[in-house]
Image (tube, rainbow, N blue to C red; front, side, top):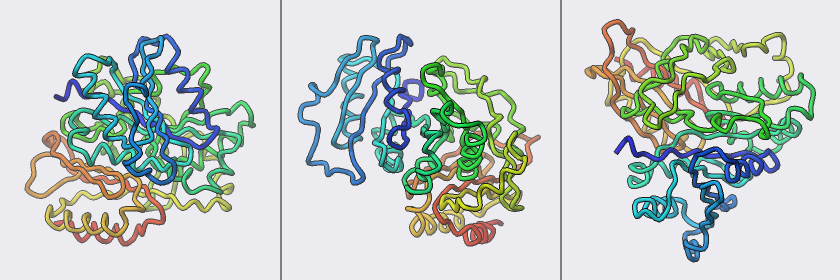
Length: 374
């Protein structure tokens, strides 16, 4: 089944951040890709499932460039199931899906759909969450709306839009701020009139599963050691991924409180005194193996208590008695784990976990994880 998995991109960002511009390009430009775009109109609350799509046929519009657009007010899992069925029946033809969330939406529940529902998980592969941040209004929106901070915390890639409207220092400060909240995201300044649409797809943000193999850089000690070898094992969609620019990663060693952001570590830190963002991230590492039962119990407890506050977490784990890497990741309370490749004789076995969340009790989680080590 793995080869026919349909990749899904979740597009999020506050009102006016440029999502519509990007979607218009996807739906109208001659890019040769067949994409189903789902415009998701739930507001803050998940509108109850009674208000389902009236008649699914009227809702789906075929665009001139081969793309499909549908608007939903109902249950996302049901609409995805419906699209997949129509693809199997030969009524619709698409290779990937883009889901746009409303500007006020927390992308968490949309992402959770791909973990919760087995039928969806067997058909669709969540590729990445992309968050658009408007350079002109981004700082103010981050100050005023926790949902914007959540959108940043969930992201695999952050696009800073409208950078031409502000000076370079303002863009650098915004970039520094979002990287501080989410050091795992790649940050790009974009102009959607010109950006290559391929920048949006096949980012492999959620790809910690055995079927697709782990990003080999994940366990690297330092985020600048990225070897540009992303073309491994992922070419089931015929795209090479060797050209990602990792210069934007933050090199954050949270245990020692030092955070340097490549290219921006010349004194920008003093601008952050007034941004006490609730969303923060930390990394946990250990060279000692975990006791599987203790770790499962501890993580289960953490998810129960802090699940709402955990936006994204992922890790590669060194488990006692397991000769393979164990990969895990999740969104809120939904956690998935899987066995991946065997540890190679030359590899130094170690665990690395990244947690991104709201007011997370870092010391409590770190001490708890330490207690799960053999």
